[in-house]
Image (cartoon, each protein chain N blue to C red):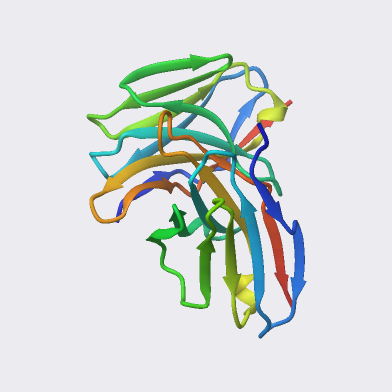
Length: 113
Length: 114
């Protein structure tokens, strides 16, 4: 069974640019959650998509947005990048049935310069 | 706000000792509890989950859950230097408006010294 795939693994962007990150969940999992992780703040929840609908949202500005496609793949977009957006972005795939375990992708390391 | 609290550490234990990691949570209705291990620069890896009060053992790991006291712990027996990592506690909660959510603590850094 393939795991959670995030692309790209690394990105370097300039302030003011926008970026799109992709996450393909485990086959059969309908929920994709996105997290931002920085050394000082730990894992911070961005949002969760379930069956193409945003179901939960964390406390992030509107520059952070996402969507989910019918095949459960999800994209996260950050517009007008700021230096403080430099972080490891992780997505987690969950079935929310059975044992409800969440599995993480390898993450996308975003550096804003 | 559904809080999950962990001591940030670092927790330092000698090789071969038992490492004890603790986590408390605020939502009494929480249903499922998870421990993730995260090595520096890597993504979190699920190592244990527990749903019922009591102990659950898997190899050198034991998860302990006490819903009345709202805490969950992870014991690592015969600690090895390779266990040095950050351990994240996660709690599954339910909200009638938004459904299920997985809330994470900030993690405890464990250092196992040879």
